[in-house]
Image (cartoon, rainbow, N blue to C red):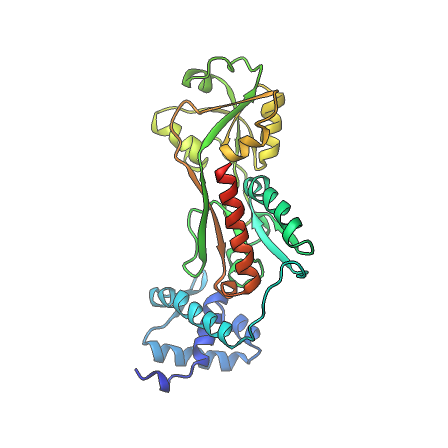
Length: 314
C-alpha cells in the first residue's frame, strides 16, 4: 500500500471510533454527520481489509485487528499533534494549571502527601484535583479528561503509557497493648480479628462477600495458598480508617508498609512483619497518549518520580 494514496483523516476517524465504540458518538466528537462517519468506517474497512468494529450484544466491539491498531494509531496521531503545536515552555513557578489525578487512598496517603509539599515549594499556583477510582473510568483517562491514574492495576489498556512508581511490601499494624503484641506468629495472627482494606481499579465499587476469598486480594490469596483463612470483621477502602481502628481496637490491619509507616512514630501502635510471605505490590502511574508529550505533564511525571525516589531512599 502506498501511504501517499491514504486519506490520513481516516486514521483520525478510526482513533475516535475505537475510543467511542459508536458511530454516532464518534460523529458528534468530530462534528460531522453520522452518514459521513458511516462512510468513513466503510472506507476504513476497505483500507484495512477488516471489519474493525462488529455489532454484538455489548454494542460495537473492536476486532482483534482493531485492538492491535489502536495503540499504534494513537501514538502516531499524538506525535503528529505534538509536532504541529507551537513549542511552549512550562514554567512551574508561574503556572496556574490544575492537574486531575485519579488516586487510591493508599497513594493519596503516602506519595501524594509528599508531592503536595514539593509543589508548594516549586509550583505554588498549581492545583491538584484528586479523584477517587470510583469517580472515573479508563475512558476518562484515555481521553485526557484525567491527567493520570496512580494506583495498583491488574491490567491497563494497551493505549496507555505507564510507569512503576515503587514496589511495597506488607506490614501488620496492631495496638501496642494488643493481647497478641508480644508474641506475633501465625497462630496469633489467625486467632485475631482483622480489618480488610483495599481499593483498586476504576469504576463504582461493589460490596464485599467475605466467602469469596479469591476476590479479597493479596493477603487472603497468600493465606489460601497455605490452607489458612483470617477472621475479617471490618471491610474498608480507607487506609487512615484502618490505621485508626487498629490503634483503638483489638483488630489487626495488614497493609502496604508505606501506609503502615504513617503511624511509625505513634507509641500507641506496633508495626510488625506478617508471619507469612506476601509478594510486594506495584504502585503504578498511567496516562493517556494524548498527554504524553505535554510539557507540563512531563514535568509533573518527573517530579512524581523524584518524590518517589526520595521516599524510597528514606
